[in-house]
Length: 123
Image 1 (cartoon, rainbow, N blue to C red):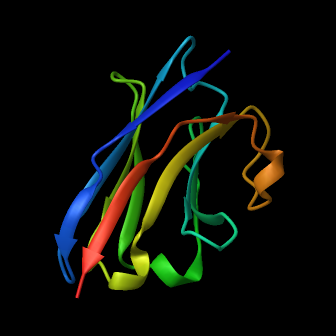
Image 2 (cartoon, helix red, strand yellow; image 1 turned 60 degrees about the vertical axis):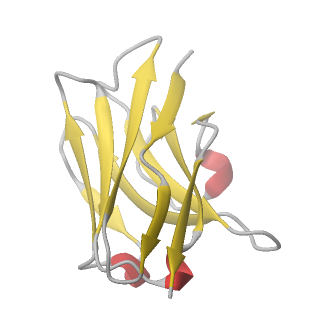
Image 3 (spheres, helix red, strand yellow; image 1 turned 180 degrees about the vertical axis):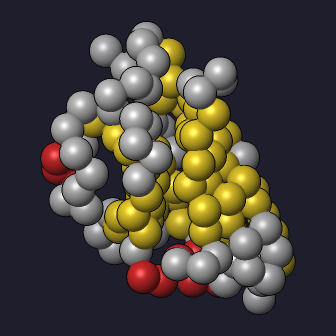
């Protein structure tokens, strides 16, 4: 089992930055892929970004390319999502997920999920 805990959400003005973290317990992220997803009320959960822990390969949804960066810290067994130039439409609950298979944007292919952290961007 893998337990995931997110942190770093909050309220920020448009144009500002936040860094989210996803820490794992129960096992290391080695040989896993870790992704970030977001959801707003009434909408489906959306893929945001993902990283292959071993290779470092990253994938982003088009709407965040150039603004968000996903990275990993081997020593801390933690994945980060650095979010810059935030926009009001980035407001959502952000969740991290992990899986032992390859990166996919298909939501139900991800096995382990955290509880999420709220990000609110004011205009």
